[in-house]
Length: 140
Image 1 (cartoon, rainbow, N blue to C red):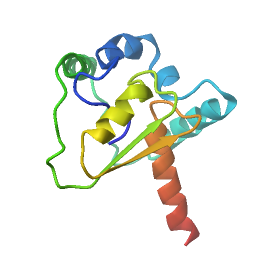
Image 2: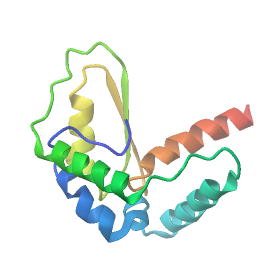
Image 3: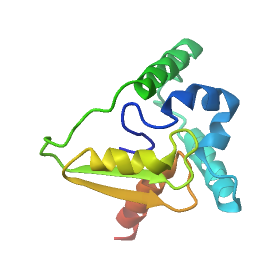
């Protein structure tokens, strides 16, 4: 799970307002590293020319934001009895789904979880995990 939080988590119902304000600025930090990561991310998005998924339309985007708003307004769920391993990752500066306390609370909701917080990363902190895993595959 990355860039998410528990149902009813602090600030989650504000995702709609933040997404409309500036999606790219909310996903990456505004540091030199964050801006570099954003440029690299956008290049990767356009690198694939064939067999691409269609972009979602405005209606689907708004429907998703409404669902996130509802999720952020509800009571948390207790997942402690689930016997599955869960990896929770996030950037340390996620303004869409505030890292503190949501990442900690989400990890604590599961009895078998590990939490990784990436430094100098925003809502797209999970991409750090993907880059780490992919670089490990190409360096082996």
